[in-house]
Image (cartoon, rainbow, N blue to C red; front, side, top):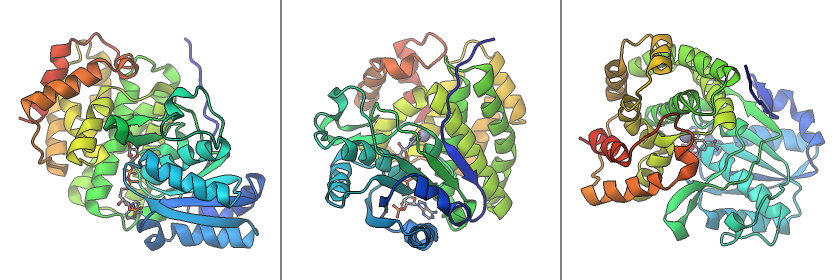
Length: 364
Ligand code: NAP
Ligand code: ZN
């Protein structure tokens, strides 16, 4: 047996966690840059909770509330400039993966004022000011991962910033997700599920990370029922938030694999939400596995007979309406086939033609 495991995030998974553990913020810094999206954190109570506790513990703050979905390096530069002007010494990301990922990148840009969108990928390992994450979707697991996925317009793609920024503290309070609309609940849950799948069926998986994957599949065996029945009760919200965090912990160790890499152009060029971009490719991806032992274990924990039953669940949950031309399939396939980072996480040898077929068959 052999594994390396490092997960340095202090997680508080609890109702009213932000208020209960407010004193911990005093150990992080003295002036915060709150980084959030345009609307949702103002409606779901997360922004109010954070502002209230910062006032309570007398930590000053500045708010940047303009993070868009799939945050761009341009937005990150703007927010970092505001952080620098205000001399903040930590960042609090509130929202889904977009604000949380943006907050990690902003923490790097603030710590290294010479870094900008043009040199960030060629600057070697960079340090950062501390980050606190408040999750308001149950999907990305970004609150526990070191990744920051950013939109790089110069390269017409989304990619991992390539730095490691683990939040110091992750607040997981599912009450912020109670009013998450059904379609976002589904797309983010599908994202969490694909993290579990890609982290589990992964060249880097270990006996340690499999524990997270298998617990996550056990939870999804129930969560899929809730999603299909649109029974989004509080117990479900807790369960899917937990499953999402488990997926995050798993990919923090193993990374994601091909569906994530293959999904980025579907988001960049076709505007498909991140979870659906991975989800639409997942079944065809899983069909390429030659050694099905672990895949079958996953299906059995999910209480599914075979991949066609997983496909039926996905068909009930979402339909993807985008046109992908033959030329685009070739273009996207070539891009992923040259992405060594993603390919090496896939545990089997995969031929180029199989990648084209995953795209082609997923959009039949
Ligand atoms: P998101 O892009 O953060 O948010 C999607 C939408 O949901 C936004 O319109 C947002 O509104 C809204 N929203 C968020 N929380 C809400 C709530 N509680 N109630 C109502 N609406 C809410 O979605 P996401 O799927 O969580 O994040 C996707 C991003 O994370 C992608 O860029 C993806 O590549 C990245 N990602 C990162 C990791 C990682 O490990 N770091 C892993 C997977 C994916 P507002 O804009 O108004 O907030
Ligand atoms: Zn994802």
